[in-house]
Every structure is written in C-alpha cells, then in structure tokens.
Image (tube, rainbow, N blue to C red; front, side):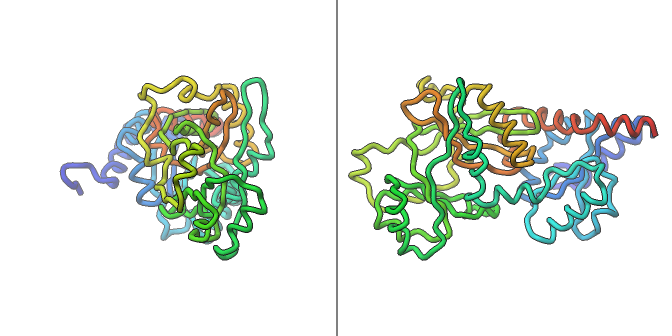
Length: 342
C-alpha cells in the first residue's frame, strides 16, 4: 500500500526479497546479511531511513522486522538482531534467544544496556577509568543521587559541599522525553522544587558547546552541538529559581558550521577519544552508544563526560548509513566463511 506516493515498509521489504531472487542460492548464502530488528515506531522512523535501506540493500544487507507476537526462535534465520525495546519480558526473550543461538550477534546484550538506564551507574565506568594522558584528561562532574523527599535536598547538597548552580536530571532513563529533561538550580531554596529520584551534578562552564561522540563498533564520529551558556558570578548573583531545559544535546542546533573560537570549538584529540571509546566498549560491553562530552572552559585538555546513551539518534549523524552498513558487514565475514564451506 502506498501513502502519498511513498513506498510502504512492507513494499520495501518485498522489493528487497525480489532483488535477492536474482541472486543464486549459493550467492545468497555467501553474501546476504540478515538483520532482524525490534525497534519502537519512533526509533524505526528515525533510524531506518530510505537512504539507509537502499544502501544496505546494495551492499547485501536485508533488514527484517521481528514480529513481537511470535516466538523469536521461530523467525529468521538472522545474522544480527538489532533492538531497542525495554521491559523485563523483552529482556528475557533476548537472553533466551542468545543462549539458543550463540552464532547470532545481538546488538546489544540487555544486561549491558541496563547500566545506561541509571544515571548513577552510567558514569561510574568513566570515573573508575581515571583517564589522563598526554592528550588530555577525562572526568565526570561531581554528583550525588537524591532518593528522598525534596525537603532533604538542600541538606544533601550542603553536606556534599557542592557549588551552585547545579544540574538536576531524572535518575532513571526510560526512553521518555521527561527522562531526558534537565534543570538548572541557582539557589538552595529552589532545590526543594525538584522531584526525586534524581541526580544532581555540579555545573561545569564549557563555553556553551557540547561534543556528541557516536560509537558504532570501532568507528567514532564526533559532532558539535550548542549547549547551555557559561554561568558567571554576576549572573549567579542575579538569577534565582529552577530553570527547565529540553533535551539539550539532541534539540540544539548543530555547531559544526559555526564560526567558533578555537579555544572552545576545537575537537577533542582523536587519540583520547579512541582510548576512551575502546575502554568503554570493553567496560560497558556495548557497541552502539554515544557519549556527551564537554571541555571545561578556560582549559584545552580537561573534558567531562556528562551522559552516555544507548543506540542514540544515529539518523542525525553525518554519513550514518555508510558507517552503520560497514559495521554490519564487519560482523559477517566469519559467517560468510562458514556458509561458503557448508
């Protein structure tokens, strides 16, 4: 069925299957990478864009929707299972499937993804890494978790010795827009307006610029986004209350083409990012995630990781379709050899 002249997902899949019929059975076994996907409708729309599907088809990659109403083991066979769904039932389905089909690459294991759904555990691996070398230093902001009623927040903040202003974020990341909201609190009294459970972080001046570091397997892609402006002593003295901001990192305009001061806009050193990405891939057990990083204002090589997200909005990443299809193909060579021998 076509809507406004566009090809529906079902028709698109049928076209890909028809294309495969022109290839011999032996070539199909050797060359086709079948990717079963289970995504929310929003994620499917942003990720499975026509430019990705066309390029994937040309490279011998077939995306197949997983039917959530049927047992996963009855579907396929798949080379890769790509998913971003939450819930205990789905996690159990994937975990059982991994045990039954160890030959299939699951992106990514549910137990590894869980670490990024809690902002307390999210940055722990970065802090434990204590990364510092000749290319720079990677830190995390000072933060505390508040689970109690709002009236206890000023006491907790004073006890921790935090400096104002403070960034407040929901403790749990559940995929909703609300879980990605952030607030900036300028005084202790306003902290009582916040709703626990939440994470409170010291605000780090960073010149109003954020680096989004996309990780796709071994590939690293960095883009710049405008962020919250610096807070001066003068503005801190004038401001009061709690200010709500939308999801800054994704909502803000790209800064890649902006005429930025080199002291602010210079990208983090590549060797530093490669080491950070390598360590986090191993520690988190993930291959699809992004890191939100800022440079401390007035420094050249002091960086802070403020957020990590699983399976982010890759559709906003330049050349994402080429990077992602190359990644999927990199998972397949061993499978090609096994099938060819068979």
